[in-house]
Length: 247
Image (cartoon, rainbow, N blue to C red; front, side, top):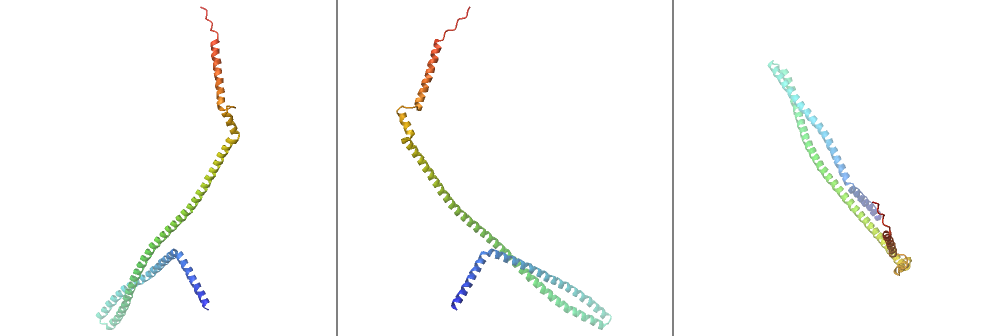
């Protein structure tokens, strides 16, 4: 039995924590909805206030009507007395007394309605002020929450970008190493070719003055050019002189 109670207590605690987490996660929405509900209540109160104000206006009109009737009946009672009609004057006096009682009731009702109107107006003004205050607070809360989300997003973006940059730098280092390895291999192949390959033999022949190298070919070209120059000079010295024209 004790185990069952503990399990029930655990479930209740878990449900409470879950409910609290849901409330905390949606606190802004709940706050906004509460403000909307408060505005709806204020609008309903204003509607009720218009009804009370209407009754206040009605009682004010009734008071003026009763006062007018009292004056009219008092005048008629005076006229009955002037004509020595005591019985009729008494009947009119009874009517004036009833009107006075009705006037008292309507005056009290009017005062009660006026008091209710004043109180409702004060309550509505106070409620509207609180709603405006809460709206300012929810605006600040939403702005703060947006800033927090933006900051978190930026932090996460910077973290992701940092890891991407680190990965990119690692890739670049690997590429550089491959390039250096390839350059070293090419230099080594060049060195081996100079020492053991065809280029090594050509270098040895050039050092010994054997074969056609660039210097030998240039020397042969110069010899050919000098020979052409000498031949041209000889041809110009052996050419016959031009005949002298007759006088």
